[in-house]
Amino acid sequence: AQSVTQPDIHITVSEGASLELRCNYSYGATPYLFWYVQSPGQGLQLLLKYFSGDTLVQGIKGFEAEFKRSQSSFNLRKPSVHWSDAAEYFCAVGFSNTGKLIFGQGTTLQVKP
Amino acid sequence: DAGITQSPRYKITETGRQVTLMCHQTWSHSYMFWYRQDLGHGLRLIYYSAAADITDKGEVPDGYVVSRSKTENFPLTLESATRSQTSVYFCASSEGGELFFGEGSRLTVL
View (cartoon, each protein chain N blue to C red):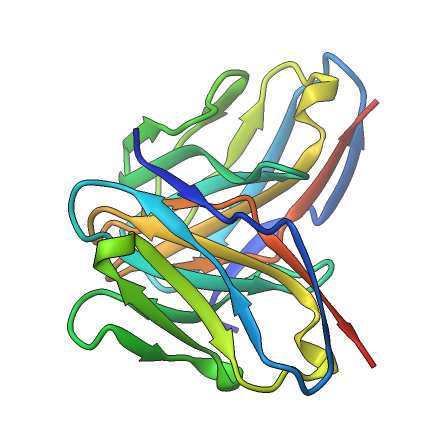
């Protein structure tokens, strides 16, 4: 069955430190890949997406993600975290262009001053 | 403003009552979705719709009913609410594979 795994439920980093959030998926072909961010009490906002082409994609707020086919991974990175990045982050995969996505369980990011 | 509007944003109801969560989009996207968000489960798909009068079950459809008589509206009904349906519900529409979310409806079933 198709699935998405975010191994880290909770991550704490210091402000200014680098960040990497992990995402692995299970599927035979290359899916559509997404990272969404959710601030408390808010809906989900798209950070970035990968459909095809260059495997390193740039998103909003200084985030980037790299698709690694051999590892079935799509990890999210940011070189220097800001306190405003504290939120919950969701990786999602889709297997067509319909928008029907499977979400990971989410990773909560806490930023220490 | 353009986008997806959900109502009500907050709802408290009792076990056994019928509840309808409304979702309206102004983009005319073909696909619309209902997800529920629960701690430890991320977002799980309840129902989705490819167009007016076309709906299909997602991962967790039991206890829910949807309809889509117009492209812009996609209401979700809990016919007899249960405590296990206490959750935050998100409506979304899609364009080119990307989902656009509403702000969510927080439902508490007592």
